[in-house]
Length: 453
Ligand SMILES: Cc1cc2nc3c(=O)[nH]c(=O)nc-3n(C[C@H](O)[C@H](O)[C@H](O)COP(=O)(O)OP(=O)(O)OC[C@H]3O[C@@H](n4cnc5c(N)ncnc54)[C@H](O)[C@@H]3O)c2cc1C
Ligand code: SF4
Ligand code: SF4
Image (cartoon, rainbow, N blue to C red; front, side):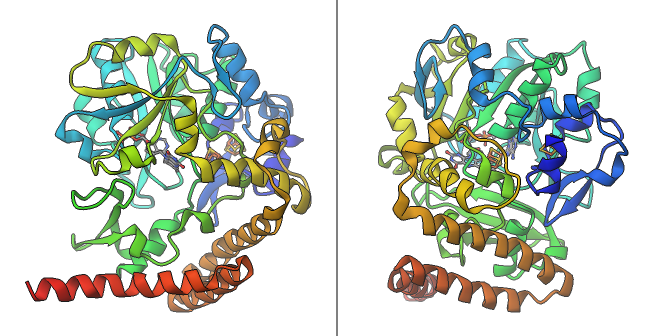
């Protein structure tokens, strides 16, 4: 019953793992995310579905899965899980600028292919279909891996390829996965499926975005949702710190426009706009079930280098060998606390917030590792978590109707008022108005300066 609860209560993230158990399952888009369509099955195999859905009560927790997988790794931190070591990484090659952070995820996948440890990689690339921008694809060469670089804050699903991967028993795979997808793969493996996936290469996750996120940003650059050809979520610039990055959108006539994230409206991750409900009940920030995990080194020591740097957690000892005696990489041990410090907001909202959301969200909700979350919670943030939840839900619902009516200007106006109220209640109205004025004026000042040079 828990699997049905996940979907009916809006906690399906659309990973597609259940498609391997119930072949006739279909997916449909709800508020910009492909999720399970319960109407596509008459009777579900409850037991097996409950065991493999990452949000189901019948599924093993991340801690239980990692305890089994990495039992030989004694070093454990209750924030980041088991680790052989924690590091900072940067590819010492100009290709690093084509990646989101230090290029570590692509680099390790290339090493595994080159050394014959895997035959194929499942990762996210531009889609060939016209109904989506990105999708999981399979790469079999180092050059093909290049096409997948960069984070896609975009809803993707394994449902269309999972059966083909499972049937390809003669090939060894690696897969890139955010924590909930990694958990789903591990749950399938615990039940004897997808055992040909040899390595799960994780990426840290703050939260996911529905497809409205890139549409919302593109609109701010004057490109309507039905006129988007491609999108780049992470554009680096030599003149800016690595955490001060840009996005770009290319329209159907091949015109590309750039926007600096900090100069786009409502781009604070703290607002949680266009966020699936599942992310509010997810306490794994650092991919605790992955063999290796890469994140952004949001630490002053590293953000000053515009090329970008990864934080890395290695959990599978076998993978450490690949990093040793390599001369085209920057690879330095850092402390687990450094890794945690690079994601503090994430721990506060996801783990601390779960305690609050368990109190104010009605109805069925996924079971969480409360014992790990408690220390991140303080009572004085209860109302903030509640307001964020409301803002996030509002953005998803209102953008759905804006897409239907094409009344985008009305959406922006209503959202602006909503955020004004949100900041007012947080006691941050003055700071918000000031930052909005600066945000609007900054590009104007830059333009005027350039004209006078
Ligand atoms: C939704 C999302 C939220 C994130 N939140 C955080 C965060 O809060 N904190 C943080 O430190 N880092 C976060 N990251 C991870 C970070 O942005 C980088 O992806 C990570 O540091 C790896 O960078 P890299 O330069 O090593 O990877 P790259 O060399 O750029 O390679 C990235 C690899 O990951 C694959 N990939 C991209 N998007 C996805 C996806 N959605 N699902 C599966 N595979 C994908 C690509 O195909 C590519 O193979 C997030 C990423 C995503 C997709
Ligand atoms: S397994 Fe994934 S796709 Fe299936 S119901 Fe659970 S979250 Fe949704
Ligand atoms: S926050 Fe958790 S549930 Fe949401 S996408 Fe990231 S890993 Fe998945």
